[in-house]
Amino acid sequence: MAKAKNRVIAGDYENQPVSSFLGTVLIEKGWGKEKTSISKNTVENYELITDEHRKSAKSGIARGLVGGALLGPVGMLAGGVSAKSKGIYVVAISFKDGKRSLIEVDDKIYKAIVTSCF
Image (cartoon, rainbow, N blue to C red):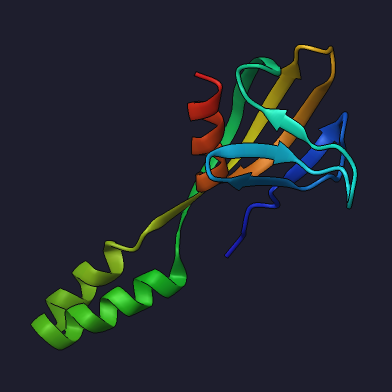
């Protein structure tokens, strides 16, 4: 299963990792270097370019086995279908200082960006 890169994929800060800690989203520029915050104080605007949702294979197998053990074949099918979805989001960000970045992030970081830029 594909996993989000959690990094800048184009533009300013290209190939730099993107992380979230306690609701703060940062573009890391390397050890001991300044980090760029992604928040309403630094972002002029952002736009969701793509979002891709995939079912987690591990989650589907585990849920299918539990469902099968409890309810037989019908439970196995229901458990497999109820697998958790994981999202990969590509977001274009325009910073107030004129820089622009295209980032690829997972659910956790995307939700933190939306919350901190609201």
